[in-house]
Image (cartoon, rainbow, N blue to C red; front, top):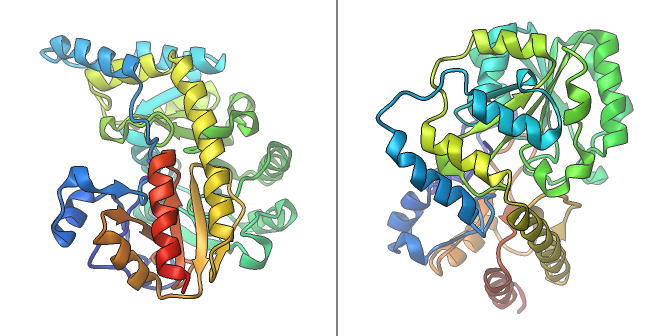
Length: 375
């Protein structure tokens, strides 16, 4: 899962290397409510990349119905859930493993395969480096350049793969929002295969732009693993359900190294039902695409704000007209939380990420930003 919110008491960059980077995650709306003296239900959380529509009604009904089953252990094989996910993509259940959020799975992968050296782009989600280091791997970084809009160059990546055993890629990338289009990702996959490198692609935000996914290609090779979860798009971070897709042999190895009963019964029923709610899926994609463009257009008109290309449900921008901490405090007291990105290696002070929410909430944010930034 990639639902990160800055700690109220720890907003400064702790360095540019993986080992001394604070693992700051959230959405800690409870801490923010205490800090600002507000009720949780009075806060609009732009720091958390979660669908503003919340879970689908079908998912909630399924979870409620499944409460009658909590007197028994979950199926350790998660057969029905894996079958539901496989059916959604037109692949085999044997090519799917489920876990307690994709975060548990991205820690499982290096623990099972024990890579000597792991490549991680920066800036990106901090748990990739943390998972590799926890498994005893050396982490090397691949800097993404601001002048290129933090775009990944496949040719440069090809050279970087020559001396590593595993690479983690977030696509679209968190926090930059940049996407590696499918054609370029297939190039990177080929480079990884040529060098015998295991490529782990976290598609936590790919549900918003499904056409660029490589999940169906992933099942044909043991060197590619795709991760997804039900937090951002399906609005259920509290259920902690994630999954990985690869070929059958790779999935079998991962399942051997996994703890039993990783997904509880109501959560499994809820996410399986969500995959069948096409009205909700289409409504979410339409809302996010429309509101993302509105937010981007409004941000570009603000003085001292530089935006970057994005394809997910969040936007990264650089603030030059005001200290980011000051701006966030001014918004916080008004019940709006933003994500200070100074804790991401590769980003310094002044970078802020906001999630795309409903039109009413987005309008409130833009109106407040105009008051604070336009003198």
